[in-house]
Image (cartoon, rainbow, N blue to C red; front, side, top):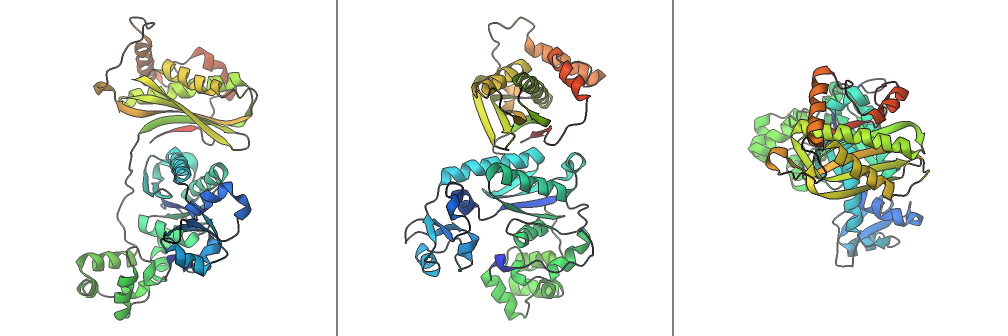
Length: 423
């Protein structure tokens, strides 16, 4: 039985679901490879499409219109084309998938550093630390869905729950292009209404074993003695399924950081078309980013910028330096150069971001002084500013060029997207 065929069971509670404590999100792109491939073939949207190659190959992905005919991932192409002969066949574009996946993961990192990717197109997020700044878990999930749709042109489904198991189950039940919140008080009722095949780890063979025991729903498993399940399925599987049947999953989100970075970005209250304003913003973001590098004892070799325009089109540019740095002046100069090289002139800008990547421990990384740097140079000046801010507050010392901008904004709290993150 396909897990995609399940429907959300009726809720036990009334009114909007309470997402208090539901800080684990499972975000899963909808038919990712097919959706990404259709970005360059918009005329095929809404039609059966299969991503794969050759009659001897296998299906990488398929649109939901093709899935309605029984086509599924990993199915031999020959069988898929027999099931859905009217489908359009598109060869995979793995470079495109990797680019979009990287951008999606960057969106997650803008929300929280606690991101556990499961594949190119899905990940767990722990948003407990983001709730205070960004709103409730459901609000954050909605923001993620909107951002991915606006920036990447594809949709995703999100499960919002208190554990990884329930969040993943919820995202599958929310597909396509949906969100499902499972309140903590409703977890047991929610899970136990489902068929056994909905449980994580129940494949065809295990489903057959459970059927022989007369167990067809999760409630059946929950009310079967644990030892009976252990005798029939083994210690690990029996215990695992009994725990899941009661909604128990103690695992935490485990970040996997192949590349670490520190960044900062700002969304303007109104779109900006003045390059001088953008330059000042870049200087401020570079200062915050470099200060956080120094606080973490890190230096980085690659400086990147992110620019989002009024129509939500987003571009990034980066430059790798000869030597790693944590100096505000150097980060700002590179970031401004990257922005100026875009030649945007009076383009309307919605968001600007600065990030430093390719990080290493500052204590273990030799830093070469530049020829034009005085004996007591910019690095020492930055550290003196850090010490002053630590003693007297972050607003006690700043760059003169940013003073007017700060006064104009009235030292307001950050707006949507204005914040920082560690990846």
